[in-house]
Image: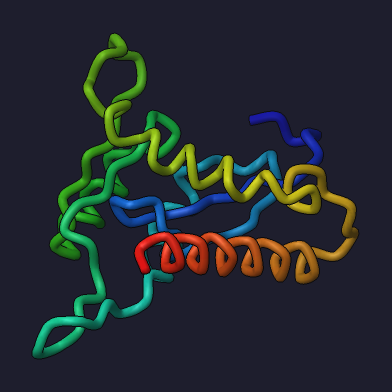
Length: 146
């Protein structure tokens, strides 16, 4: 870990269509795996079917940055199947077929200049722009479906 690395890192969890469900902001020197459970806990209840709204995804997919056996166990205890690429293994696990959805959402977020290059000194201001960017993506996804 490079403790002197400056900047911010955006962590986003999406559904299968690329709609952001939750997003967090950390310093660029933080490991990705530290945000895994925080992102899963931040997913709001999904309404639509009769009965109790679903609060947890069935499966969580992630790249090698989220590889951690303790986090896998914690996800399994919550009833979530972890599909996380393992470090120090050959590429070609097949996760790239699905990973592009999250990468595309991050690309949509970074089309906003204020998110691509951080100009704000305060975290809460930048996080507000992150939330606004996620809301714009949700609007575009809903507008596209209509």
